[in-house]
Image (cartoon, rainbow, N blue to C red):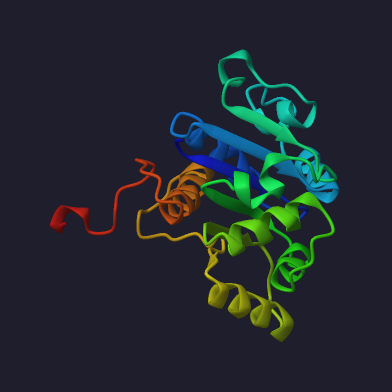
Length: 202
Protein backbone atom coordinates (compact mmCIF):
# COMPACT_ATOMS: atom_id res chain seq x y z
CA UNK A 1 0.00 0.00 0.00
CA UNK A 2 1.33 3.44 -0.94
CA UNK A 3 1.40 6.72 0.92
CA UNK A 4 -1.88 7.54 2.70
CA UNK A 5 -2.05 10.94 4.37
CA UNK A 6 -4.74 12.41 6.58
CA UNK A 7 -4.99 16.21 6.50
CA UNK A 8 -6.85 17.69 9.45
CA UNK A 9 -7.94 21.33 9.24
CA UNK A 10 -8.97 23.10 12.43
CA UNK A 11 -10.23 26.56 13.30
CA UNK A 12 -6.86 28.30 13.51
CA UNK A 13 -5.88 30.87 10.89
CA UNK A 14 -3.77 29.69 7.97
CA UNK A 15 -6.13 27.65 5.79
CA UNK A 16 -4.24 28.83 2.71
CA UNK A 17 -1.33 26.61 3.80
CA UNK A 18 -3.67 23.62 3.83
CA UNK A 19 -4.91 24.50 0.34
CA UNK A 20 -1.35 24.66 -1.01
CA UNK A 21 -0.45 21.43 0.77
CA UNK A 22 -3.40 19.68 -0.90
CA UNK A 23 -2.29 20.91 -4.32
CA UNK A 24 1.21 19.52 -3.73
CA UNK A 25 0.23 16.25 -2.05
CA UNK A 26 -2.40 15.03 -4.49
CA UNK A 27 0.01 14.12 -7.32
CA UNK A 28 2.35 12.35 -4.86
CA UNK A 29 0.14 10.17 -2.63
CA UNK A 30 -2.15 7.20 -3.15
CA UNK A 31 -4.82 8.44 -0.75
CA UNK A 32 -5.54 11.83 0.81
CA UNK A 33 -8.11 11.97 3.58
CA UNK A 34 -9.55 15.43 4.28
CA UNK A 35 -11.06 16.20 7.67
CA UNK A 36 -12.40 19.56 8.92
CA UNK A 37 -13.48 20.50 12.41
CA UNK A 38 -16.61 22.66 12.54
CA UNK A 39 -14.50 25.71 13.34
CA UNK A 40 -12.10 24.71 10.57
CA UNK A 41 -14.96 24.87 8.08
CA UNK A 42 -15.95 28.34 9.22
CA UNK A 43 -12.41 29.71 9.11
CA UNK A 44 -11.79 28.17 5.68
CA UNK A 45 -14.91 29.85 4.30
CA UNK A 46 -13.76 33.14 5.82
CA UNK A 47 -10.14 33.01 4.63
CA UNK A 48 -10.35 31.36 1.22
CA UNK A 49 -11.60 33.60 -1.56
CA UNK A 50 -14.67 32.34 -3.48
CA UNK A 51 -13.40 33.92 -6.70
CA UNK A 52 -10.55 31.39 -6.64
CA UNK A 53 -12.59 28.82 -8.52
CA UNK A 54 -9.78 26.29 -8.52
CA UNK A 55 -9.58 26.28 -4.71
CA UNK A 56 -9.84 22.61 -3.79
CA UNK A 57 -10.69 23.13 -0.14
CA UNK A 58 -13.72 25.23 -1.02
CA UNK A 59 -14.92 22.40 -3.26
CA UNK A 60 -14.27 19.86 -0.49
CA UNK A 61 -16.29 21.99 1.94
CA UNK A 62 -19.28 21.50 -0.36
CA UNK A 63 -18.65 17.77 -0.60
CA UNK A 64 -17.36 18.07 -4.16
CA UNK A 65 -14.26 16.25 -5.38
CA UNK A 66 -13.10 17.08 -8.94
CA UNK A 67 -13.30 14.00 -11.19
CA UNK A 68 -9.54 13.80 -11.66
CA UNK A 69 -9.02 13.33 -7.90
CA UNK A 70 -11.94 11.06 -6.98
CA UNK A 71 -9.74 7.98 -6.91
CA UNK A 72 -7.47 9.58 -4.32
CA UNK A 73 -9.51 11.90 -2.10
CA UNK A 74 -11.77 10.78 0.74
CA UNK A 75 -13.77 13.41 2.61
CA UNK A 76 -14.35 12.49 6.24
CA UNK A 77 -16.81 13.76 8.85
CA UNK A 78 -15.51 14.72 12.26
CA UNK A 79 -18.22 12.75 14.07
CA UNK A 80 -17.66 9.54 12.08
CA UNK A 81 -15.86 7.12 14.37
CA UNK A 82 -16.37 4.37 11.79
CA UNK A 83 -14.00 6.09 9.37
CA UNK A 84 -10.94 3.98 8.49
CA UNK A 85 -8.51 6.41 10.18
CA UNK A 86 -10.20 5.80 13.57
CA UNK A 87 -8.63 2.34 13.76
CA UNK A 88 -5.04 1.23 14.15
CA UNK A 89 -5.71 -1.50 11.58
CA UNK A 90 -6.18 1.20 8.94
CA UNK A 91 -3.85 3.90 10.23
CA UNK A 92 -2.66 6.41 7.61
CA UNK A 93 1.04 6.66 6.79
CA UNK A 94 1.08 10.20 8.21
CA UNK A 95 -1.28 12.75 9.68
CA UNK A 96 -0.92 16.48 9.20
CA UNK A 97 -2.93 18.97 11.27
CA UNK A 98 -2.70 22.23 9.35
CA UNK A 99 -3.49 24.69 10.77
CA UNK A 100 -3.80 23.39 14.31
CA UNK A 101 -5.73 25.32 16.94
CA UNK A 102 -4.48 25.38 20.50
CA UNK A 103 -7.67 23.63 21.60
CA UNK A 104 -7.04 20.70 19.25
CA UNK A 105 -3.38 20.61 20.23
CA UNK A 106 -4.31 20.47 23.93
CA UNK A 107 -6.85 17.67 23.48
CA UNK A 108 -4.47 15.59 21.36
CA UNK A 109 -1.72 16.08 23.95
CA UNK A 110 -4.07 14.89 26.71
CA UNK A 111 -5.31 11.85 24.76
CA UNK A 112 -8.86 13.15 24.47
CA UNK A 113 -10.78 11.53 21.60
CA UNK A 114 -14.02 13.49 21.49
CA UNK A 115 -14.11 13.58 17.69
CA UNK A 116 -12.48 11.90 14.70
CA UNK A 117 -9.67 14.48 14.44
CA UNK A 118 -8.52 13.76 17.98
CA UNK A 119 -9.08 10.01 17.71
CA UNK A 120 -7.11 9.80 14.46
CA UNK A 121 -4.19 11.71 16.01
CA UNK A 122 -4.26 9.32 18.97
CA UNK A 123 -4.19 6.34 16.59
CA UNK A 124 -1.27 7.79 14.63
CA UNK A 125 0.69 8.30 17.84
CA UNK A 126 -0.03 4.86 19.27
CA UNK A 127 0.87 3.17 15.99
CA UNK A 128 4.15 5.14 15.84
CA UNK A 129 3.29 6.83 12.57
CA UNK A 130 4.23 10.39 11.63
CA UNK A 131 2.15 13.17 13.16
CA UNK A 132 2.95 16.71 11.99
CA UNK A 133 1.23 19.52 13.88
CA UNK A 134 1.31 23.11 12.60
CA UNK A 135 0.12 25.41 15.40
CA UNK A 136 -0.81 28.95 14.40
CA UNK A 137 -0.88 31.08 17.52
CA UNK A 138 1.12 33.87 19.10
CA UNK A 139 2.23 34.70 21.67
CA UNK A 140 2.49 31.28 23.30
CA UNK A 141 1.71 30.76 26.96
CA UNK A 142 3.17 28.08 29.22
CA UNK A 143 0.20 25.76 28.64
CA UNK A 144 0.74 25.85 24.86
CA UNK A 145 4.45 25.18 25.27
CA UNK A 146 3.89 22.29 27.69
CA UNK A 147 1.49 20.64 25.26
CA UNK A 148 3.96 21.04 22.40
CA UNK A 149 6.75 19.55 24.48
CA UNK A 150 4.53 16.66 25.51
CA UNK A 151 3.60 15.90 21.90
CA UNK A 152 7.21 16.15 20.77
CA UNK A 153 8.18 13.65 23.45
CA UNK A 154 5.47 11.32 22.10
CA UNK A 155 7.04 11.49 18.64
CA UNK A 156 5.00 14.23 16.97
CA UNK A 157 6.68 16.98 14.98
CA UNK A 158 5.72 20.56 15.79
CA UNK A 159 6.08 22.69 12.64
CA UNK A 160 4.81 26.24 13.17
CA UNK A 161 4.14 28.06 9.88
CA UNK A 162 6.96 30.56 10.38
CA UNK A 163 8.11 32.27 7.17
CA UNK A 164 11.77 32.78 6.31
CA UNK A 165 13.29 35.44 4.10
CA UNK A 166 16.66 34.12 2.98
CA UNK A 167 15.06 33.04 -0.32
CA UNK A 168 14.16 36.72 -0.84
CA UNK A 169 10.44 36.13 -1.42
CA UNK A 170 8.81 38.54 -3.82
CA UNK A 171 5.15 37.58 -3.39
CA UNK A 172 2.80 36.15 -0.81
CA UNK A 173 2.79 32.96 -2.88
CA UNK A 174 6.56 32.67 -2.40
CA UNK A 175 6.08 32.85 1.37
CA UNK A 176 3.26 30.31 1.30
CA UNK A 177 5.40 27.96 -0.81
CA UNK A 178 8.26 28.17 1.69
CA UNK A 179 5.99 27.15 4.57
CA UNK A 180 4.37 24.42 2.48
CA UNK A 181 7.76 23.10 1.42
CA UNK A 182 8.94 22.84 5.03
CA UNK A 183 5.75 20.99 5.93
CA UNK A 184 6.20 18.56 3.02
CA UNK A 185 9.76 17.91 4.15
CA UNK A 186 8.42 17.01 7.59
CA UNK A 187 6.26 14.40 5.83
CA UNK A 188 9.24 13.13 3.81
CA UNK A 189 7.58 14.34 0.61
CA UNK A 190 9.86 15.70 -2.12
CA UNK A 191 9.09 19.10 -3.59
CA UNK A 192 10.54 21.91 -5.69
CA UNK A 193 8.70 24.81 -4.09
CA UNK A 194 11.85 26.76 -3.21
CA UNK A 195 15.61 26.58 -3.55
CA UNK A 196 17.42 24.96 -0.65
CA UNK A 197 19.54 27.15 1.58
CA UNK A 198 22.98 27.64 0.02
CA UNK A 199 22.07 25.00 -2.57
CA UNK A 200 25.04 25.95 -4.74
CA UNK A 201 27.27 24.35 -2.09
CA UNK A 202 25.19 21.21 -1.49
